[in-house]
View: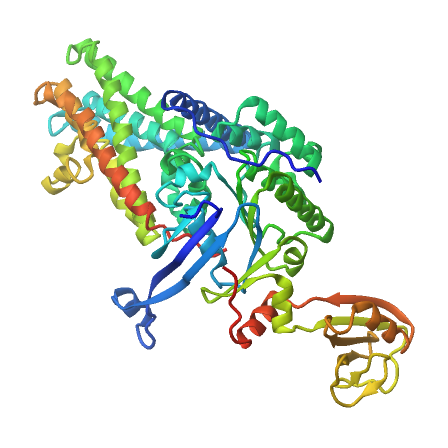
Length: 283
Length: 352
């Protein structure tokens, strides 16, 4: 047999083209995920419809209460609707692009994280690009619908300016970022304790639902928890409160960006610490 | 680290701590709240030096520490103590850089996109490893020649046979032309034809492109046909490092031959010995082989012999003199037998 060129691996590109390569790879992986999902169209359509119906049912409950009592702690139905919309859009964006964090427990339990670690990219990037959960777009549609209708009503009454709509979008993006940071921190716990489903209820599910409504309605301990340890309120409640003229200063609008940077840094540290403790499974 | 090593480990160890299970009433609850833990040593003090281009079999029974070692060498697990370098890189500190220089196949875990055509997985992986388009086309051509990828490139991975999928897995692990390849049970579950094809491919990759290969397997035929060197591990310790032939010589494992006759010859009984001409002996003798079992119903006789003294054809000729042979099969010793005998033989560790 003739010996050919020895294998020597593929070198990584320079930092600027590596950024482009990351973008191209992310796009390729996400589109592959979508194509894979589209193999099961019925499942995709039905789960999207169920999600929308469930979300509207949730909001209708609070709408009925507000209709009856007109306001809760000084927030009328349209103001609650704006906060609900901002939070829901942010949560929906997180669920679309960060859904693998929701099911991270199974990566640890089944040892599937092995295949993430043998790739030449950061493990978090590889994990998040494995799947895009398109059916969660229902959350964005529902949030945009409720938030949009409520914001328009407030604009008509002069309680909100047209220019504030941009700030609401910014708050939604910041919320998505904070949901992601909390989910990364929670997922990192799986490296140590393996099972995190119950923990996710405490750090993600319950706070996400609580964050849909004004924090003023909750006891102080819960309100401050949502503004510190699980800082979801910094992305939606703090900026929306100022935009609706319920207190605060322009600094309230800087808070979401600062909270995102800080939370992602902390989450990233926890992730790397956890990664070094990964135990894998038997083969 | 030495430049002449593709894989180098020094005193590599990995331990886990597991809770001590309590017995008696409320045992489960007491285990949960107890701080008492027990150390489980998965790998202990493994020092290996594998040179570029070597094809090494890494064998041992289930739970011996093979996969744990491979996972430490690929950067998946962090060792408790000791050091490792693969192609000059530290798997834990330089994991991402190392991923470009190694290929990994876990026989029981797919790295392909299950619902998509096989070609899509290759395209994604070529982008992931930043393979130039010309090099990618070259890869497709070469691997189509070697593995016949072309016949199933457009088929979704979930519809591939196990043999096809393993061919695709191997190609996927080599798309970025890594100089080191880790194979963890790549032939598990494959039929004889698929195994033969895979072994032929691995031999070619090793020879043509000087790829260093570390293979863990439960199939001794894989080792026999491919590996010039074998490392045996048991309970986390390396108990042998050298050639398979010299391991066989040391542990002297008998080969088992099953012979099916048209009628079982009379006066055969288990425990009897047969001489080189097929004559019956009542006690062991040099060059004699032993009747292990006789199944009258299936008319099958099993004999054990030492291949170093009695070549298989000679045994067959002698067996033929005892009756009309309908079928024969040769059963090689299992990895478990090999490890058991290695442990019984003192001072078996050798190698570098």
